[in-house]
Image (cartoon, rainbow, N blue to C red; front, side, top):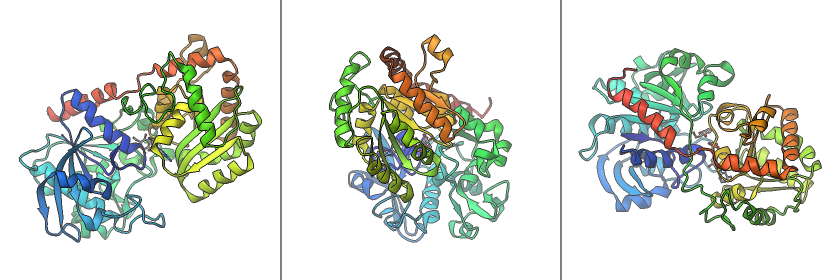
Length: 480
Ligand code: ADP
Ligand code: GLC
């Protein structure tokens, strides 16, 4: 089968999509399903091309020559679309140096979809997929190209990782990308007068999934669907939520090379050594009586970090500390740097993207804060669970599905793994931070919650089986 996506860990990553694309094919392989992953050959991937094999050539793919290469790396079989005029650019894969979308993103990802559809229909190097699984708007045009080919095509499944990213372009892009006018309708690829890549994906694929059951329900509501709730309601029978997992080898506190002191649920005291290192890196005071919270996040409105900025005086007043690692919105970046200056020793901020540091933070913090306004799944709370770093999360999307709130019933049953709050307001977040600090002052209760958290089944095994079940219904004639 063929995966088509715009990012894949460990090669190229801007968020959780990359982690998912890097991990699922490996789990599916263990379950007996061979997957090839098609990606654009960004600079981080071009070195693989030299060791790979060219399987197709294009004289003019949206403005320049291109070729498709097969390569194997990091346990993955890759199909790399090498189109230097589209993908050989420095920096962020979606944005120019000024932080604006590349002006030709429609041509860049339209090309990915076009070649993806061609491989789906006619194969590459004698191989042809029995099913194509596309991810997010960047691959959204694949089923449109399949449909307008008029050929019998293998089934296509779309996973929506975040409906806030829709890939919207002027209607005139249809001509440039060779999309039939007949597909440009409100029931099809048109989003309020514009061409919607994600909309086209939803309209023309065979099945739609998203990354948690709660987000699958939320997407049907105007508050979350962002204008796509109508078409998602129309496709309700084909929509389901399959929870993300995490790569248990990459995220393992027992073997993680980024930790100064690896640990297990039986050697939790060693976590203190990681905490001391984190305090050093973020210039934070030590305080054994209050938790060290962390944030590891894209700094965007989605993540609700303005609420956290509002409640910082309360967090600091309780003796707690906060370490923030993130990048994104310049306003948020400046606000967290200013907060670190305002609360020296209590708040530390590192602006940037740092994979090893993100591991050390999971290993050394007591709790991870995720006050998202919406969160399709979220992975950092899953890493937190695995590292015994208790998630304090908004009750939304995948956060609601993966954290067991420390309410009275869960405490009596002894199954709590974190703290949830609703509604997503500063007052509710402040209250959740207060509750977390109270629990932290009861070491036996906190330790029990850490062990509960570390015992949660957060790997891919179960969800990969759910994908497999869905693939089976599709390849055996689509009956359910
Ligand atoms: P999203 O995909 O919406 O950004 P997720 O929680 O699904 O949210 O995934 C975010 C991923 O990106 C996680 O693997 C997280 O550790 C990582 N991440 C986010 N910001 C940073 C950063 N500044 N440095 C390192 N890793 C980061
Ligand atoms: C998106 C979502 C995030 C999810 C990730 C991987 O970026 O914002 O919640 O975990 O995709 O599916």
